[in-house]
Amino acid sequence: MTSIPDETHRPDYPPKTPPPPKRPVEPPRPEADTTVAVRSRLRAAISNRRAANWALENAPWSPGKAGRHVLDQLDAWHLRPSTGPAARLTEITELLTQAALADGGRRVSLHLADQDQQVLVMVLSHTPARDVTSDALLRDVADLGASSCGADTATDGRRLWAVIDL
Image 1 (cartoon, one colour):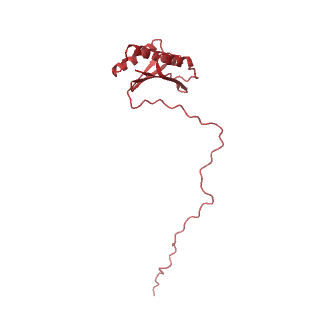
Image 2: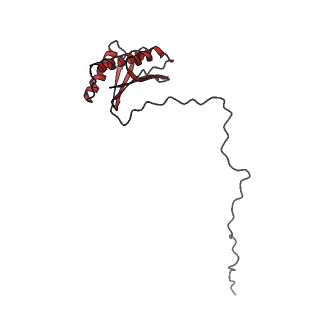
């Protein structure tokens, strides 16, 4: 006599499930931190327009060279301003370059971009320095005809900029 297994009794049915955890799992709590999170300065980004840049050494002739670079590039873009604006554009570029070179670094970088008959001239000093931009510098740039200008300082150096109408 053979025994027929009982189909109604299955030892592994229903399957065993693990017991629920004793405490819900949660991420570790942050330690009490009293420091304030400081957001780093946003990088300058020139996009969706023509742009050019140059690295200039810290030398007495660099401001004049910066002014020539700007005028040559605008001429290449067929945006050469008339005699009056060309002179003030050169003066603004030289003034911003002189201020950046005064930070004492080995080099500065000059950036140029155009949009809607305006040109952006930006000079970066690449020298960690304290904020030494005076209101007189920005006033002088505005007096030369910049429609807007500004400066900011971070650990990677000082950034000076001006927007000039062509």
